[in-house]
Amino acid sequence: MTATTTAPLTTAPSRTSTPAHRLRSWVTRAPLLPALIFMIVVTQLPFVATLVISFFDWNALYPQARHFTGLANYHDVLSQPDLRKSVLTTIVLTVAVVLVSLALGLALALLLDRRFRGRGLVRTLLIAPFLVVPVAAALLWKHVLYNPEYGLFNGLLHWVGGSGAAQPDWVSNTPLLAVEASLVWQWTPFMMLILLAGLQSRDPQLIEAARVDGAGTWQIFRHMTLPHLRRYLELGALLGSIYIVQNFDAVFTITSGGLGTANLPYTVYQSFYQAHENGLASAAGVLVVIGSIIIATLALRVVSSLFREEVSRA
Image 1 (cartoon, rainbow, N blue to C red):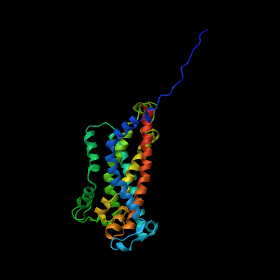
Image 2 (image 1 turned 45 degrees about the horizontal axis):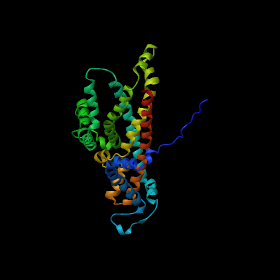
Image 3 (image 1 turned 180 degrees about the vertical axis):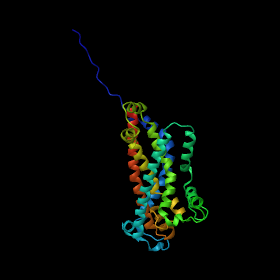
Image 4 (image 1 turned 120 degrees about the vertical axis):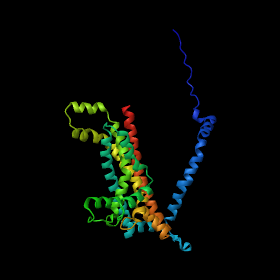
């Protein structure tokens, strides 16, 4: 009979609790501190200052008359007819541009997903509008396309209908539609790129198997392509909404906020730089930021779910 002895189990000290490991962790993170401090100073401190100012009745022309008003500025933003109309205009502009850009982007993505001669050149040309500076794009639409005297649209009408053809003033007649068209032209390539990436991530063997089983093009698109693209459609809609909600360039350049096209960012500019109402403008700006944060949070969740799906497939 042999006796076995077991040595007492000893737990090694955790490496995370040693001073040397903590020092090493701080040393590795130290190069990131300047960037973190810079980001806080540039983004967070101004937002905190804006949040504080939004609780004051503060006109820059009468700085001594400022006083604390609590949530009165937010009430004014949501209750005054002009400000409430700018909120509605922002919603209409965002929804219209996002939906039309998604539909056109999906059509172009389906086109570029096919193989044909010159596909690379076509893809480059279709991406080009998204690379144009927003102010330059708005100026292009205002002067090159919309101008009633020498614009391309009226030139085409004159060429088709002759000298007696009507020469409408596009910006004056359809101001909101004019702004929406310029934004759709600029954001359709962005939607196209996202949806094209989704189309090219499909399993070609599944598509081929469906064709062998007798599925037609419409059936494959409806029952396989659209469900696969659902996450990509959501991502494009959310990311597009984040930027279009904050759009200022097109409204300022094409209509100068007139004719019922003033959205919330333009109203913030108007309240701050023209009316000098710092408190009211700050409250409107805070609402824009809160809306953008909500949309960005949803977008990040969609991106995370996409990453999880790709990892599960690998």
